[in-house]
Image 1 (cartoon, rainbow, N blue to C red):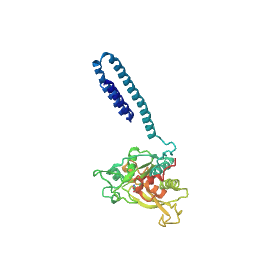
Image 2: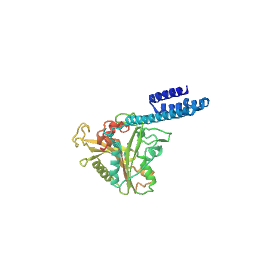
Image 3: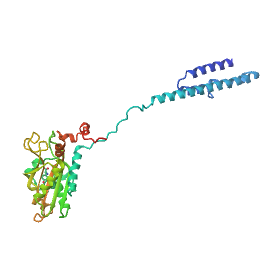
Length: 345
Ligand code: DAH
C-alpha cells in the first residue's frame, strides 16, 4: 500500500518536474515534494504502523525516492537556468554592426557670435567692458541722459514699467551715466553689451526685447574725428575692409552734435540695389559727442572734458551680416535655424 503510494508520488513528481518550464515553478515543486511537510515526508509517519521487517525496506525506498526526486529537480534546475540565461542574452543583444549615434556639437546662436565679434573689435582698440542693470530707474534711463519728464523723445522709448520710477531699460545708454558716476572724473573708454526692452508689437523687424552695445569715450580733447575713426575701423573689421562709412546729422538728447552712421552696402558696394533701397548705404548705428548737460550731471566739467558715445543694435548687425529675415529667430530656439550656424564636429 505504502509502496504503491511512494510510486504514485514519484511518478507525479517526475511528470510535474518535466513539465515545469520556469525556475519559479520548479522552486514550488521542491517545496511540494521534498520539504518537511511534503506528501512524501508525510508517509514517514506511517512507518510506525508497519511490521518491523518491512520498516527498513520502506525507509530505504522512501530515502531513495526522495534522492531521485531531488536529483531530477536539480537537473531540471540547471537546464532551466541555462535556457533562461540564453533567452536573456538573446533579448539583450547589441548589434555592434549598427552605425553609432553621432554626437553633434551645439552651435552658438549667431546673436552671440556677433556680440563676441563686436566686443573683440573694441577690446582690441583698448576699450573695456562695462555692465549695468537691466531693471533701471527713470533717473538713469532718461533724466541723467538729458531726457527730462515729458520730453518728446520718451514717446519713442515706451517700455515695461515696474513702478512709476522703475522700468526695464530701453537702451544701454544708462550705463554711460553709471560709468561716469563711478569713474571719479577719470578718463573713460568702455563698451557695454546688454539686453534692452521696449513696448513694441513683435514682427519681423520689431521685438520687445533686443540688445545693444553702448560705447563711451571721455577724455580731454576728444573730438568728432575720434568718433569717426573709431566707427570706421569698427565697420571695416566687422563688414570688410572695403566698407566706407558716412555720418548723417541726427538727433539724440544725450549727444550734441548727433549722427546716424551708415556703411556702404555690402551687396552692391555702394552702387545702389534693392537691399539698400537704391541709396548705396545701410544705417548701422547712432552716436555723437556727449552732451555737455550729460557730462555735467554725471560729474564731468564740460569745459575740461569732452567725449563721444554710440549705440549699436546687435541683432541689426547680425541680420546684415547673415542675411537673417526675421529678428524673432534669434530667440525662438528653432534648432533648424540654429543648426545653420553650427560648427562642424
Ligand atoms: N540710445 C540710442 C537708442 O537706443 C542709441 C544711441 C544713440 C546711443 C546715440 C548712443 C548715442 O550712445 O550716442 O536709440
